[in-house]
Amino acid sequence: MKSLNASNPSFTVHSFMLWACLTLIPGLVLADPTPHRISFSVTEQQTVKNDRLHVVFAAQYQASTAEQVSQRVNQIMQTALSELSNEYRQYAQTGTYHIRPHFQRDGRISEWSGQQNLILNLPKDGVDISGVLSNLQRHLIYQSVRADISPDKRQKIEQDLQSQAIKKYQQQAQFLAQAFNEKRYRLAETHLQPSHAMQPRNLMSSESNAPSIEMGSQTLSVKIDGVLEIY
Image (cartoon, rainbow, N blue to C red; front, top):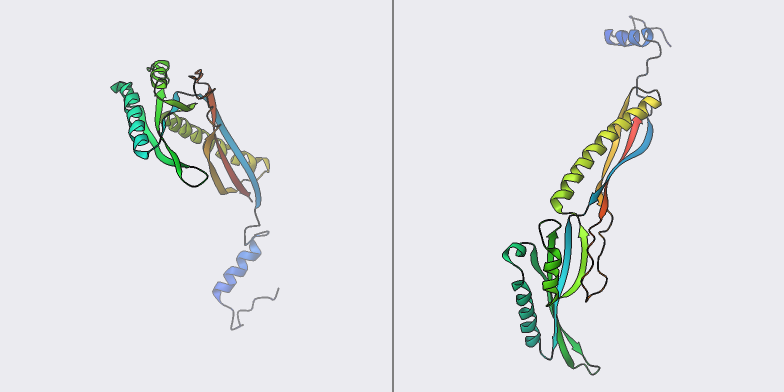
């Protein structure tokens, strides 16, 4: 390195102070070294008992005219709804409704068919599930039956799992930095994957017979992926 000369026109007090700092602090690195990147992930999961039964019924009818089909489907649905007390109607809602023609080979309409769905979300406790299903089965056809977790219960458990996963994630980042004997680290990337569960079990055994009801359980899980930078 060239010696600093105060008589040099380009020499300034600032230049001297910078030169002094660089020479008096051995091993000083002016820029951070390239960090070492470590990918890692943590998962939290919990087995949860299903507390809701999701049932889909259908009112179906076929006739020679669309008007006949429409009238009969509406009549069947109204009769089925009358089987539900006010207490149980809060768990019911009508769903998809359609009427469509069926054609012969020559393109003429041979008949019409129609269908409207009735959807029930019945809580496990406090409801005579078997009685409700048996009454509706006299008028409607089973489409699907599955056990599931109610929205409020699912939300609470998911929030708890996220909190636990975040805590574990932070602890794992600290552990990895210490394992590499590095005191400086930062979380460069964090990806929280939405909670997911196994597909709710369909309880249908046939379309004409009432299903055996076994609520069962499913596993909810939350996963966090991250990238740790250590220096």
